[in-house]
Length: 116
Length: 113
Image 1 (cartoon, chains in turn orange, green):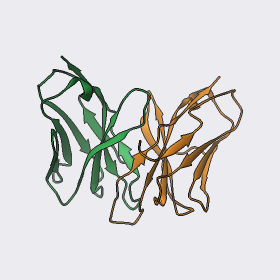
Image 2 (cartoon, one colour):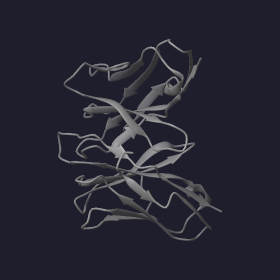
Image 3 (cartoon, one colour):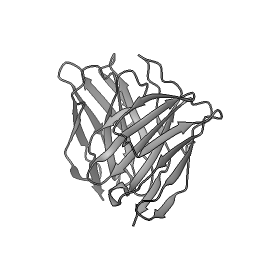
C-alpha cells in the first residue's frame, strides 16, 4: 500500500458529461501529480500541485482542470467527456517540489474511467 | 519536447536468468531516474531510483546504472523469479517540478519457471 488513496476505483459515464476524481496524498506529502495512462499514449503527466498551488502542467487538455485543497487532497475534473478520454487516471504524491531536489513519488491504485 | 525511449517492449526469460531493460532520455536537465513496476490492475510501484550524481545503485537483485553523457540508464534484474513478471517503466524527471516524470512506454517482462 503506497499510502495514496484514489476514489472512485471505477467510473462509467456518457460522452459530454463531467466527472471528478479524488486523490488523498500520503501523510505529509505536499505535492500531488496527476497522470493519464492509455494503451496508445502510455503514462502521461497531466498536472502538478504543490501545497495548494499549481506548479507544473504537462499534456493536460483545456477540458480538464485540477485543484488542491487546504487539507492537501486533490481533485481532477474532466468535462465534455469524449470516448478518447477513457483511460486509467493516476494520482501520485511526493514530499517536496523544490527545484534541484527530487523525492520519491508514490502512486495510487488509479481510477478507471470508461466513457460510453 | 522531452522524451524517454525504452527497450525492449517485451522480454521473456527463464527463471534464474538475468533481465536488462534500457532507456534513453532527451532532456539533459533531467536529474532523477526512477523505475516502476506495474502489476495488472495496480498502480506503478517504485522499485529503485538513481540520481544524476551517482553512476550505479544496487538493491538486492535489482541494480540501475546511469550514463549521463550518453543519456542512458538501465535496469538489471538478476536471478529472476516468476513474481518479477510485470510491466516495468523507466522515467526521467521534468526540470523544476520536483518529481513530475516523463515515462517510457514500458517493458512487459515474463519470467517462466
